[in-house]
Structures are given as C-alpha cells and as structure tokens.
Image (cartoon, rainbow, N blue to C red; front, side, top):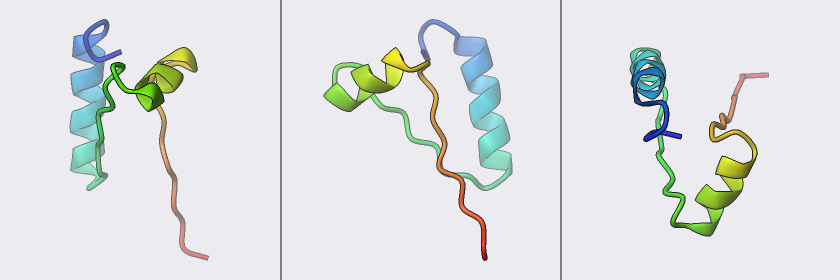
Length: 50
C-alpha cells in the first residue's frame, strides 16, 4: 500500500501523527502484512473512554 499510493499514505501518516496517533507500517513480507494487504491495506484500532 505504501509503495503503491505514496502520496496518499504520507498524507494519512502526517494527519495521524498530528492527532498524536501511533502509526505502524507492516511489511507485506510478513504474514500479517499479507493479510492486511488482502483486506485493503489500512487498519485502525479506535479507543474511546467509557
């Protein structure tokens, strides 16, 4: 995903970091990265206080 859509990815990462989010890039050379790529290439964990 990062290689294919570099500009979009950079913008998404910058926005996430401005919001103090943690960004993790997972290689498609790893099994988890392959699975993530197969479902669109981007994931997020959302946490809200209850």
